[in-house]
Length: 236
Image (cartoon, rainbow, N blue to C red; front, top):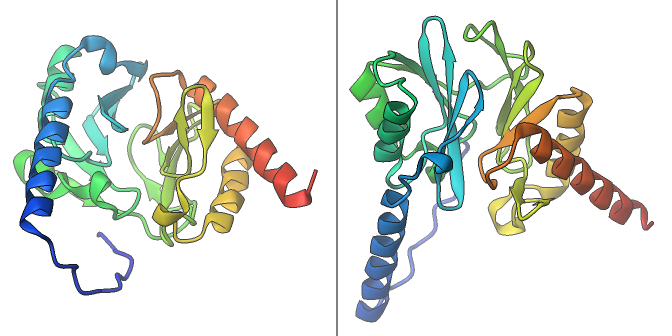
């Protein structure tokens, strides 16, 4: 069952006609860029049972086991089409999509969730408790990684020692960094959650905002980030 963080409602600012037009043009540009992501190399298998679906500035994942497929977060604008293309390219298009797992309630992760659930007849899970267990792929465990949001979750695949980290960090251009403060509920808590993630001693990590890289490379970047932020907190 899904659970959402409370949202503070504020009046929307007045938009001018020029502002609305600029917004529409920007939206059209973003959609066009997303739909142009058709190259096979942009949608790699990062593990034989994990498919990474890539779009500009974000990505999401499909996990496969003997029962079918499980979508980990649902992507943003154009995510439905990107998912269909990725499944066809890897020959997974005839596999049943059994479930959708959500790390947190931000729009770039949940925009397509309801549509995917209806289209596939899939269940939706948004674990609310640390150590919640999902009976997929020999067992996936929810790991509470708050900071980005209060209920932000990662997903630990213990059999393969891989951690899907959601928006715990971003990983581009050979460097990891924290999400911008404006997108975080508590950036200091985010740092503590990085320590929680590394304490699992993963073999690799998979962020939802990252460049095309192996899980081990993203882990290397995350460790370097942790070293930097730890040094800044101690003044070294």
